[in-house]
Length: 434
Image 1 (cartoon, rainbow, N blue to C red):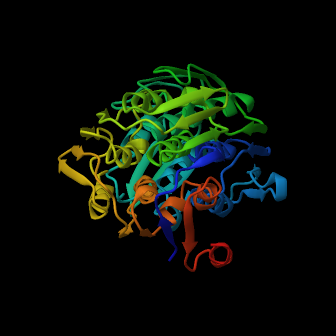
Image 2: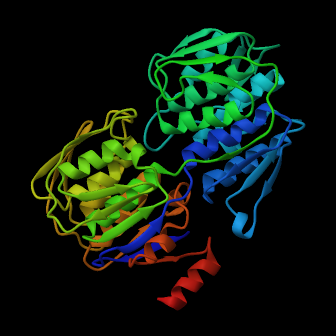
């Protein structure tokens, strides 16, 4: 099992480039199920969740062609024949976003069999809102033996009001509605940039969608969709992680290939914490020469502070003067990284959905364990400023959503290497160069 070995104390200097957004690429890949024609997606990140989705689509009968060399971030998907409109437990259990295929399969094939995703380390992510919405569109749904089975001769437009904001629920039903008969009006929708990016692709495919990125989305159903070419938006969470890396190490880092407009809530909080940032077109320069100040955050749906940046921000405020309060409103169990930070010397007390972080704690190297994707990132950030050599185990979590993070960080001055069996060639190469 792979591990990261990180020696702290080096400021990050130079330019690091952001990859495409995993959370935008996954629904766009699922959207290819809606047409028989090829869908070409560019700026696809090379991360584990993408490979899982490729495997899932291939198992259904799709042809998935990967780019090579300079085109390595391009994927072409053609679902001319979907012989098995099913998402098995073996694939869904490794990535909950696999349930995004439910809506497109019912809309295109008239039937779908998708495994319930099961448990999740950071808390419940029920798909009951997906099911309620599909039933509003006319699907007949049965749950048995751990699977959702949905059928519909043709979905029909309807008004859908989400009981609570759900990103994957919005995306799943948005895709289903594109081929439904008549008009669908969706209320209380997720406003994330990834939702708007999906709608952009669907409109290129011939869908008629208005309002994506707002609380209300209108979809006029069409009889068929065509192929399209689409470039995935930059990953705002990866960008935010690198921005915090520059700040926490006291570096001078240019985070290139991002969209600063997607980072508004984070940049405002960093300013409050004393971090200097300078957005410029498609990049953000972060200058970590100011002392860090305590800063409270409260996670919310977009455009609020993202839950996917909570763990990284917690790592930052361990180095800030004063006490910070971190409140997690999205997931009920997303503080598992806190105990690992405490093992490194952080002063953190958990009070239900709040974490009180007493800052300016000198961190020291330790052997720590990654529990989920973003927790992994927070431990990497802490290790970058810890005294000594930190070993982070279970980094397969971080591989789910960050493309070659160790190589990108090493390129801007971090002392980081990968060891283990999953990537022996990469690990051996890094060992020789360190």
